[in-house]
Image 1 (tube, rainbow, N blue to C red):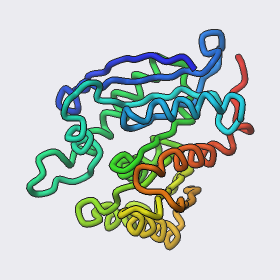
Image 2: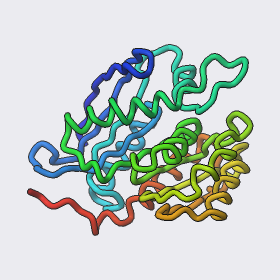
Image 3: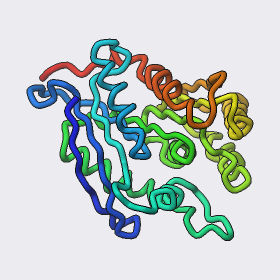
Length: 251
């Protein structure tokens, strides 16, 4: 894959400048195709996810795609910024949280249109991947903007945030709503979040939302951080498992 770096400054998220780490598939420059886009949260995931996308060129587990990783660049307060952007509620005594609504608006109204203008994208095939707070945000996005992403990979999500705020809100956001989404939800067996991750899966099992194709996997012997290579590789292969039948032909 060919990689490049761009920047985008958001008017929605307090003038925040985000570094975009972007990988385009082999042959992109010569092709006339429109490609699926995979949006990835947290800059440190870019090497792994870009490599998985590149390997799929030979393994055929995923389609050729554009990978867009949203990063904070060289900011010294990365952990504060990601907590601000990826958590859905403000918590007393914590000044760096509760901005998921603004970050989601940034993605929907600024980032995605920018990528669609700049690259040959397929707006009908858009995916989101996140881990930990990123996984929590991915689920927040699914529940609040179900039309925005057609494929979601949520690994080791921190559903316990703010006394399980999203778990409590989920039934009201799922009931009576029709989705067109494939969701891979996963956790590690050596993880403090696993109980809450399973609780969200149980909500899905009880409601069985229309049009939401989902699975839940617990990876044995893994912890909150080590689960990522397993969750990402298997989760991406699962949410893209139908890509061969939906391949975009050369124009």
